Image 1 (cartoon, rainbow, N blue to C red):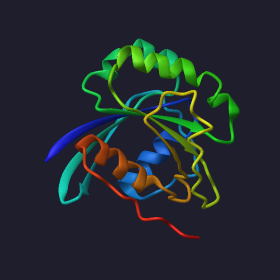
Image 2 (cartoon, rainbow, N blue to C red):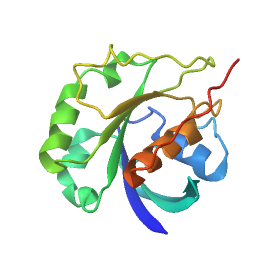
Image 3 (tube, rainbow, N blue to C red):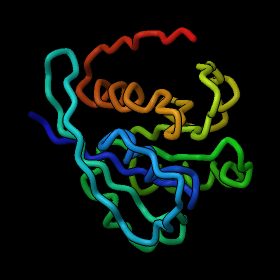
Length: 171
């Protein structure tokens, strides 16, 4: 079984911890706790009969914290940057975050997750985000458990270089 480190970043209150809690424990908490420290969780997934152990690091929610703790980047196989679709300010300097990742994690795939989609729709908005150099863009809701597992399965498949075809959810 392979271990793959995934670093999750983004501003405070965009749902980073909720995404991980939903994946690992299948739970959602409505209360908010400030993410002022690094959290590490593990989740084992099977992709095309291959097992992978995801080691998920959730970074504190500011770019200044991230810049001061470059050791977070060591051994990172993929990075997920989370934005809140209801807070345009979390998109405001996305290009600065992406260029920061490219500088310190060259060659590491960066995924963009637009969280807090509260209605069950799966949109292809890849054209909307063409100015950002992200490997894939996901639309998720930790609250409604929408596309959380599928997102991590897709990322794990990418890291294992395995083809992975998501089942299309129809609502």
